[in-house]
Amino acid sequence: MQLASRSHNALADKAVGLTPDTILRLSDELEANRQSRKSAWATLQRLHKFLEATGATISIPEDRNFGTEGEAIESGLERTMQDETR
Image (cartoon, rainbow, N blue to C red; front, side, top):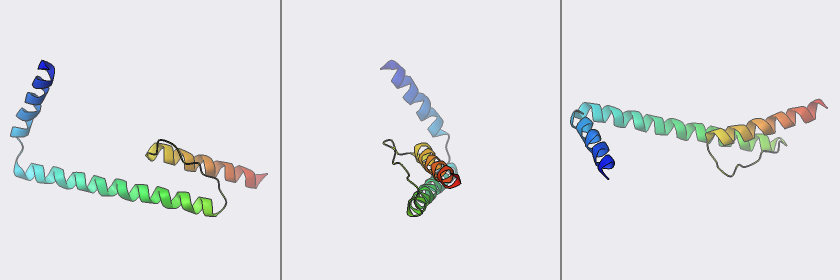
């Protein structure tokens, strides 16, 4: 528990030095990052649906995140392109 208490105190000490402008800037950055991730996820899903509509078989990963979704789309696209070249 003492380690957690020290960690909390260090965080609190750092937070004391934050100005309202800094907090607002960080909040704006967090919101911009959230919107960017949301847009990127929507783009991956549109790509997934488009590829399936054109006949590609795209797996749905159990652990859905940017990495696994991208890998599933890439793998499905590679299989589709290989099938077309045969």
